[in-house]
Amino acid sequence: MSELRVLIVEDNDEKYRTVRSLISAGASGLTVGFTHAREYAEAIKTLSERSYDVVILDLVLPAGAYGVPNKDNSR
Image (cartoon, rainbow, N blue to C red; front, side, top):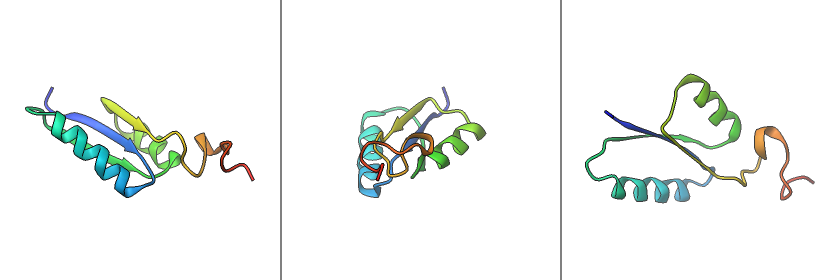
């Protein structure tokens, strides 16, 4: 494998940086390419354009899954 491709779907930049740092620290000897999507729609578009080896998904994004409100934002 030439590069491990990781998509991180996270709206909080600090959490994104933490997850990226943890993966990088544990990936000794591997080349890791990161892509950051901040919302579900962006992640879906990104996934339709390229394949990834790993997808890390924040399950409580403000827009809800696929545009469907989740229990925390269904006002």
